[in-house]
Image 1 (cartoon, rainbow, N blue to C red):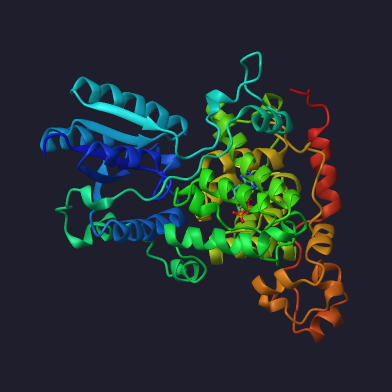
Image 2 (image 1 turned 30 degrees about the horizontal axis):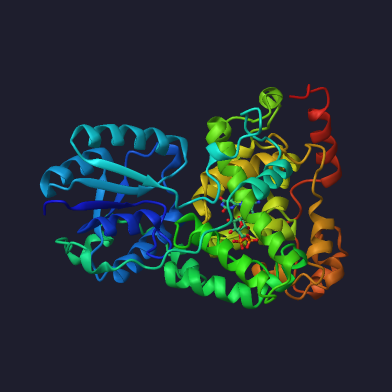
Length: 476
Ligand SMILES: Cc1cc2nc3c(=O)[nH]c(=O)nc-3n(C[C@H](O)[C@H](O)[C@H](O)COP(=O)(O)OP(=O)(O)OC[C@H]3O[C@@H](n4cnc5c(N)ncnc54)[C@H](O)[C@@H]3O)c2cc1C
């Protein structure tokens, strides 16, 4: 196997528009390798939902490679070292990852492999704008989204025409047994995974189908529709992007192309790309402020009197707060591994402001339950809602779950989908059953505390408590 190249799949489980894979195959005979990295810091090991996704995504990838995906588990440095020696490979290619622990790991691996005489080439395949290309004129990172976005639009290159699928004839046959993916034991034992499976098909083919569907339907009303949880106006590409089954370059290139051909409205396309750039902004923040995952970005929040209340946390997690929009969101998360963005903001505000629990407790629950759990977007979004983050919503902006629900789910369609016990409650009362006349609820088959919980807190009181706690804190 002289002259062999190893291509290491990481957050890029795709064949199309995969710069490192194309470069590796151009080099010659290639071993396509995936390593389940057990050395990941414990707190950021893949959550249960992500593991479910990964299992299925690897199966899909292996099928696209005619069963030739090599699978390993353990410390990537040791595994790559062993493989270099066994195969006499002379080069290793990968697409760059940007989580702080991955950057440190990859630097170390690069040194080790280079010392062993191998070349190591890393490529850009997971972001549109790499963090070191997005600095301000004074060489400091942006902390505010809009200038980051505007500057990027005017200075960053346009998306490239996506690379096509490279020839897979040059792959080295995988000697591993057929159960190589199930041997990773990624699937959770709970039957919970069955319900998630009804809503999603992991893998590159499904990611492309999702994009096509979105460009044909959802994007036409994206700006307005992205706030309405019952509508299918969002792309639902997030888990596919997270695992790199589709590249942000591919998505953006196709959106721009469609908007140039007038297939879609320019302003809808711009709005959608703006959201994709929030992902880039989150990565830039994570790169320059790596403690954003577990420390308040605004340091004055260090002294904020977060409460500890395990009982309330559990009720929030289980969707039993008595506020239907919050509960529907939390049950959507449990049932499908996803939650609509508007509802993510509402439930996060409820946790950090009405319950005054630390945003890290919410971020950790999301990390375990979200199929799209992404260290950059999750940490930055939680800090954004909590008011502790960069360019964050001010702490005093507290979402009222009842008025949010009335505005964004006026007929309670989303609520009823995930809280079927409220299906017969009239629209007028669906947003705040605890303040509805008892008779109306009984007529709809609901006794509070039996079929559906009584509200666990008073919105006005908890709002005042949160504002009091916030008062007097110096600004960062
Ligand atoms: C508390 C909280 C936690 C979140 N955690 C995550 C997370 O772990 N992973 C994650 O991918 N997103 C997270 N988000 C951002 C956002 O909710 C999701 O990206 C979005 O709902 C995914 O659905 P979609 O693909 O249909 O989005 P679309 O509206 O179709 O947007 C397209 C893509 O743009 C990106 N995007 C959109 N909004 C944001 C945003 N606010 N921040 C960063 N990227 C964005 C995503 O990659 C998304 O797939 C979080 C938001 C909140 C408020």
